[in-house]
Amino acid sequence: MDIKLAKNDKRYIEGADDVYSIMQRVLLRDNKIDQEKEHFWMIGMNEAGYILYIELIALGTYRSVDIEPMNVFRVAVMKNASRVIAVHNHPTGRLEPSDADKEVTDRLIQVGRILNITFVDHLIISPVNYSSFRATGLMDELEKSLKYVPTYQVVEQIRKEEKRIAKEKLAIERDKTKTAKEKVRLEKDKTKTAQEKAREAREQAKAEREAKQIEKQRREKLEQTMVNTLLEKGVGIESIAKIMEITPKQVEKIINKTR
Image 1 (tube, rainbow, N blue to C red):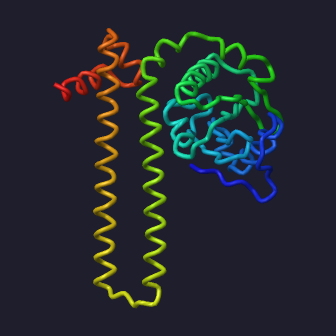
Image 2: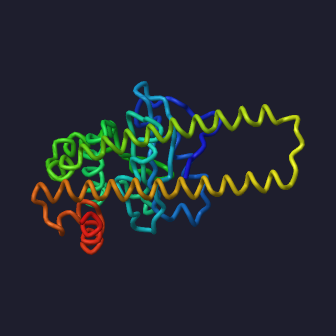
Image 3: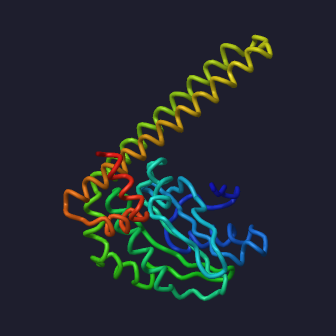
């Protein structure tokens, strides 16, 4: 879910204080029930630190929130963000990072490297204070970690291909928007009949179905490529399942499709 900045919110990030001043207000906007759940946000920026987006990636329970690395970076890829900052809250008010927080950060650092997106910092916030992985030195420590390097380097080329496809998709969408606006301008003075509107609705529905089918085929091809690459490198099905965060049965199903 895209988070809209308030009129007076700062648009440039110079440090953790700037991040917290924005995200504290975002957290306090939620009703009391939602404030008692863990949120995980991602802030995407350009090289100058200008905020391109703030996205609520996941909303969890009182104690945890599930994070999938590719969901975290999906918007960053689509909006060409070169730097990102993760932010999540602890409803308990405790700002000390858990082992799970460190684990997620370690994984996201490696995925960011593969996609050439700098993972700048990870903040844990409460309504009254915050803790920064970068300020405490934990970010520097995790950046030296080798725990996930072998796993994610194997899929580096696949991630680059996914980024290229995402950019092409974004360009196509922009062209469609431009074409649609031009069409509206040309037909502005025309009176559309109910039959014409119904036809346009059918065409739009058809286009959406085709787009969904294309996206499904692209994702399946990407999964097949990833599995084949890992198999060629001698990675077992159980390990592939862990890397792709799916079940071994799903891996076998993908393998069977390629035969």
